[in-house]
Amino acid sequence: MTELVRRAGAILWKDLLTETRTRQGLSAMLSFAALILFLFTFAFGADAALLSRIAGGLLWVAIVFTGTLALGRSFQSEELAGGARLLRLYPGDVRAIYLGKLAGNVLLLAALELLLFPATAVLFQVELLPHAATLTLVAFLGTLGFSTIGTFFAALTVHLRARELLLPLLLFPALVPVVIGSVGATVETLAGDPFGRAGGWIRLLTAYDVILFVVCMWIFPVVLEE
Amino acid sequence: MQRTLGALALATIAIGTIIGLFIVPADGLQGEIQRLLYVHVPTAWVGMLAFFFVFIMSTLYLVQRRLDWDLMAASAVEIGVVAIALTIILGSIWGQGTWGVWWEWDPRLTTTALLLIVYVGYLVVRSMTEDPDQRARWCAVIGVIGFVQVPIVYLSVFWWRSLHQPPSSPRSMATVFGFTLLFNFAAYTIGFAYLMMRRYRLAKRELSLELAGPDAEP
Image (cartoon, rainbow over all chains, first blue to last red; front, side, top):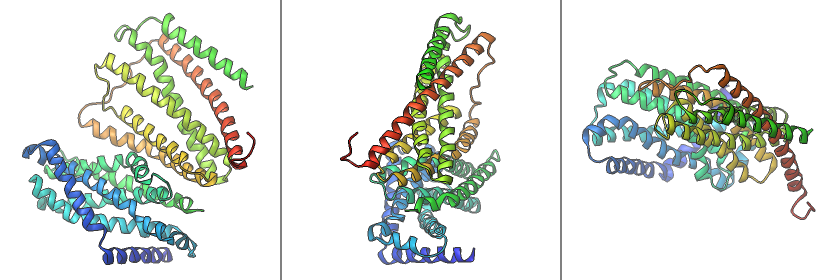
């Protein structure tokens, strides 16, 4: 168990080091996410009341779209440089690769959300600070669910020809509960949770996260076999 | 065996269609359009049966690694996709006649549509992978995950919708309608078994041809 975590940590460290040295991902992702929010405003019109009501939904669509781009990259650097096979040849459980990549994706998305949530608050005129604790929990659970299934499908599609198309095709149906739960919890929380429904959505998210994690951990070694 | 099954499937589906179209009286409330349900519900059943079959075969493949299980799963996916697509189209026509809309964000409907996309994805992944073992492995993974997520997707859409309105539920049916439906269930299940056999045999031939290489005689 500790070996697994140590190995996962090594992979996470390697990816973080690459990311901080090249700084390719985050700034491009952030600009992309901001552009999506702008496009939403153009698409729905600058109706402040409407935008602040649906801000939670817009925010999560932006996270899902941007996150999908990030996922596509998470196994690509090894695949392109030929390091994927070496990574598999290392002794120990290959689940460490999954865990390391999963942690990397969660961290990358967390960094994105740290800037995207305030941006949403500014652009769509919603109050975040009074609900900071709940929103952090929702963001974490949503991001964890997204990354759990996303990292899994990213590993599955990385060898395929039309992977940019196939990753979302496989991923989005599985994401439906994550999106519904995260949006539900965010929208209810931002509205001050008048009907006490946010708790239900948070429980749904937690349950789905656990199920996804168990299934993905169980099957992942099959994906990496050669 | 296969011929007999085929003939039986053809005969029962033909009889079921005749009963559904001409013998059973039209529904008092919905009128003639209700007859669509005699096909809509059995195709939905066949689709779900096919996808459940895919789940079992995929799990078996992951445990035993026999390519036969993979071929069975893939055959069932093709039949399931056709059946579910038919279900959605027929349901949509029925919805237009009864509810007045082509589409309703009902949990069953939404989940079925998402399910269709998952298995279309399965087929796309399949068509893009050349190595038979790798293809079988990845498809088995999608076959397992695709099925596991169904109840949770349904539940989440159900809760999402329940904020607005309760999902539509079928009214209890009179015996004569129930009998016709039951008969068609049996007929379409036989049809599924027949198509499964045919598609599986074809899949086996395709695989042996693939393994023999491009120069082999068919």
